Length: 155
Image 1 (cartoon, rainbow, N blue to C red):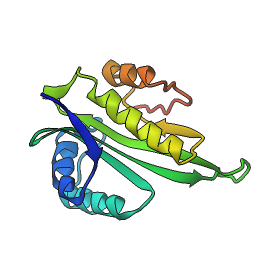
Image 2 (tube, rainbow, N blue to C red):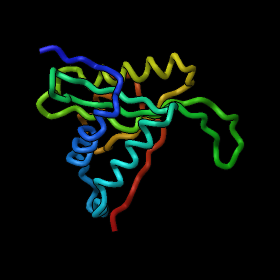
Image 3 (cartoon, rainbow, N blue to C red):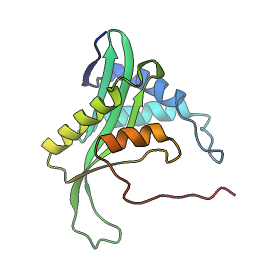
Image 4 (cartoon, rainbow, N blue to C red):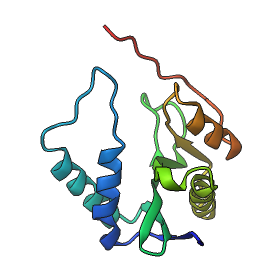
């Protein structure tokens, strides 16, 4: 079956919300809020309505195989010592387990990077779980490399 990737629509938001919450496995020091579904719905709706945000959905007929959510923004350093620059940020990439290892994540990333390149961004940034080799492999294949390490110590 063919996987189609298209821009997200308002009708996709509930499905994206369910998938995102289902795969949210926080660290042991994190817990989902009791109102996480409502908070996610509100956040997704706001993101969808803001023009600097982008979203793509991968579908196989009636089934959502995956999604990507990102944004294009002008970044300014804190403290303000570096000239502002236009960057792309990929906030989330998700591929349903049934569709993994078929290149869908790579296709979603490539599409977002092209849109960001067309919008004259100078760099694209993302975050992913350091202890999970599968996402690290996908990001490396897409040309991403670690720049700074955000570390934590569990107490």
